[in-house]
Image 1: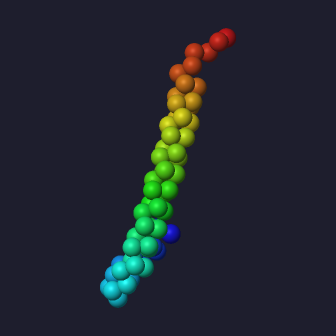
Image 2: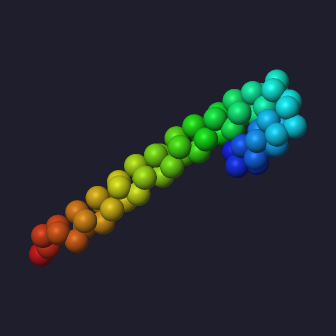
Image 3: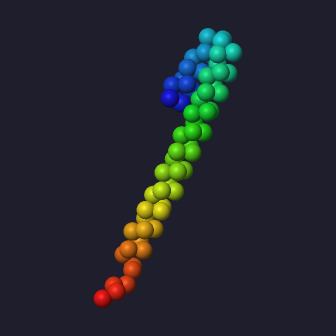
Length: 63
């Protein structure tokens, strides 16, 4: 969605629609920030999952 908004913003600038271009630029930035937050959340979850797996590998057997 952000790529579409960025492309539309550049098209609006090419045809000299300044107001529409600013709106599309703001929309693109909003979607990029949301995308970044989702990526950071996914990285955090992946690190937690790897930590759980590493603890399971190095956990001494309790036999």
